[in-house]
Image (tube, rainbow, N blue to C red):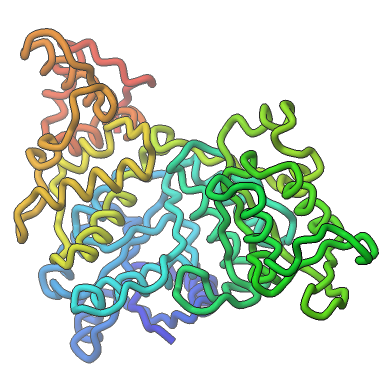
Length: 466
């Protein structure tokens, strides 16, 4: 069992927090103050979890601990209603930031991930991917409520959203949190085993190949004398997903024949095992990651209605990154640490202006675009130096695809347009709070008021004091 030092948790929350962490095999040592925390860490180095609910006072504690224990792994817990604290936690060097309500599995995943990073930098293996969702925004808190509901059942889950919004990550979180529990993953390199999370991209195969890939090479016939049940064999992906999850991508590209066989198997929950000819109970939970236009594909007949019904018992809509800007600082920090680990360079810090700009960009490609961007920034910046605004600006494209402003006009006009849109995005990120936005921009509040008036900034919501 992993141990973690928890500093700043209120007494009223400790019992429930301890239970949640214990369920994820994480034990807690409670610390009342910094001297006690430092004493415990001198005895045994362990990850530290800091509650930042007290704002500035808690951040000062974080900085004090960091100055004394620069190599200690530290995480933060924040109130999702305070997006500024998420940014401050990243700037204070936290490895990850958790939003309330605290999830024990999220904490355990983060610790395991950081340990894998250390192993990778020392030449160890990569390990299996963790399944984490960042839920600092209201939009993602709604998603997490749906994830919690989906985790308690075995019904099909349809996860709808733009490319890069975390559809497969959401499916993995549901799978790992399900009553059947997490099982060996097909990406780990281990042999397939019942209970695995098995992914199929239906667009990657022609009709015949997809049929064999799913049902197995010795289960090609549809029915025969099988009493109406589908045949599956042990060399197929469906058998690998037995008691686990089958995650489908691009289901509209599957042939009508394959869709019909899938729908029948999911309806009957029984199959004939081709190797023995015996009927077996078949429990596979279907999930599908789909684009926003999936309903149109059903109406056009490209997706069978009976299959669609079984895939969409529960529907989850993933918001695009531009609608969940509060998640961007923590998500960017996650990608930053992941990229540094993959390149085997020490974790990089990021400056406040750089992080503010990253959070303000539109990210039309969502998380995939953000990760690729972070990778370019890390690869293009000197080893051992933190990432500053100039590093981010060097990789911002001016073709309108990755920036908050468009090309054209004089340099002065372009600068004013960029500054206006950038300030508007930061104000939007901080819900119109002038003090928080000014802090993120690195300017005085009076200066920000002046810029709002002179640039005619529209933040999309009423500007207010904080």
